[in-house]
Length: 420
Ligand code: HEM
Image (cartoon, rainbow, N blue to C red; front, side, top):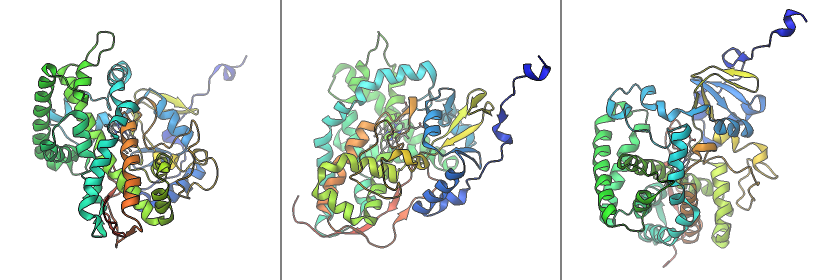
């Protein structure tokens, strides 16, 4: 046997590969052009070089990487990446989104029941009331800014109802959620005082709520989380506060932006809007299709917690990858037939190949059942009460680099309908 036979070829490092590029300009294109630009890169390669790492573009690879526990959620590194050094932000207890391994399994097991489809279904009548109440003031005018009038306020009462916060505190929650979420903005470093203040007030409020629920249990999420027990294990008060924060952070901006993305798509597809009004039973399919076609979360980030070899390529420890949920959503395999660039709410999702906007693997969206219910309830009511919907001028989209993308302003006209 020669020496050459005994040497195992070491995998080539990803840094040495000649890869196509995805550029910031491609993200800044108008949405459908951006999707097409990403897909044209995806046709050349499953992986592309991006400004701070590598974009993963094909469905199977996005799923494989999100399911591989050696890849850790980059959200844990966010404050450091943004140059934030204040211990208030850097030394926070690990949230479920940033936890990995056993710590994550434990948290997920403790809270899973509270986020089941059954729990989400309990809130459906409440969701219908909220959306109808938001439509009432604009219904007779035939005009609305859907983003401001409907999408922005929609998730707050639902999260409050879920948690068990009373109606008089909705405004407080809305402000805290908005300020706390600024941590994800590119300008976060300049707004740390505002964020800190909101976070402190929210934490104090939640601690008080937890104390009250310990002596007066109700049927809300806080009570369920307090009671969550798995083999004698429980969430500590600190973990409860962190979990409630994760719910507020994960469950407000996402839903409101996804709803605005959905209405934006329907503005371009009036036939599909009319079809949804006529056949509200299509809502579940419509939600999957709209999230596939235009997801509010277009990608996520992971870093290699150790040297990883995937597809015979070495990803050295610390390498960043960005699984593109949006690109995966246009991969042929996600739709049974037809053109992925056609928006069709009658499309049946392909079994085992769901749209990717809720992610995949251990961090798969904890609130997916709730978010689905919220969108499934809101969209048909909007379609029925706002027939002949059309964009009234330019839709103002958020900057494309925003982690959770959606409309800032979505002015529309529609045919006014009397009564509910
Ligand atoms: C349409 C609305 C929503 C979208 C598009 C969405 C999307 C996502 C995505 C993509 C992830 C995974 C992130 C990653 O892997 O890096 C995620 C995780 C998460 N989401 Fe959602 N989400 C939505 C609504 C909600 C709601 C309503 C809640 C709570 C009530 C929620 C709570 C969470 C939590 C707690 C996690 C972290 C789960 C974990 O790490 O185990 N989300 N979401």
